[in-house]
Image (tube, rainbow, N blue to C red; front, side, top):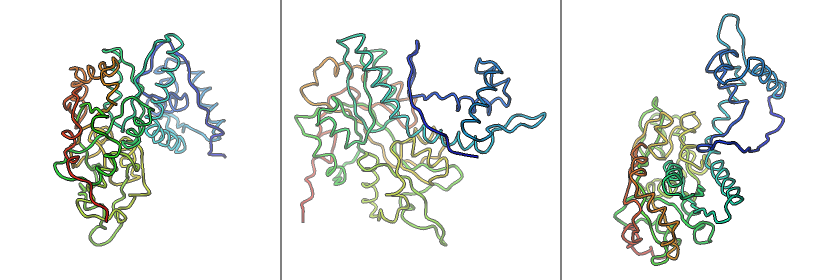
Length: 375
């Protein structure tokens, strides 16, 4: 029997109620999750508010479409998902984590476009930002408490700043560790994209980055990534972030400081994810042993966390828009007690001069150091 779905169809609907976050609804996976949790069609039907006949018919429909049985039936025992159905659920969870930032951006864009049909004066503040777990919460509280609609698009730190320069957004978000001495990796990557007097830095929050690992493995050190275990055996499998992301810059900075060879890190260039949650999922699922990311993502997936650095997350806009009503509303949202409370609820997060306009050269200490001379 075929184990390949006949096709993937995407769509969206209009509902009377709003949707929180980037939840992706799918009747097949909702059905499988209910059956796994409740162990019978009757209980799954009751929990979902549907009839036994409807749930049974849906199950048979999906088995026909997929060409595989989805449930194992044993007299007198709970119904269990087949190994094929369990693999489907696992694969869907993996895909969902990777797609969440993109789905949320698409949903927000659709919301923005259709809002224009109701209000021709409707304005949205476009925010391109390095991936962060707190920013969707800022989206929610900015709209609810300050009437500000944020069109949030996650990308790497470098790409976010390029988007600002190119006029593809009005605010960019990036993060840098708290460093008191020269940092050539950050200087080379970010300094050409930031211009004192042109760019205005706005404080937001701090967060903690470190190495994630499963509870059943020994806590790794950074140096462990580039060596094989004593007595031989396989090296630690590392999952990296994409080039241009702030976390990739952080890793390059740390391994340069430690004088490590990145080519000796298993997965440095070949095992790459685009969000902190995707990195945590890769480690939690066993696809990798170690990943670099924020503490909140590690805790959300039941992983252990070995802290390495604290970093500051900044928002930046161009000088001409700093005094605009949209930026004023954004700064008010950042300075609000609600934002501080939201950050305190995330492990390894806290507010940092929220809403304040800061000097590039003071907020980024490594800026004062001259660029390394070319030889």
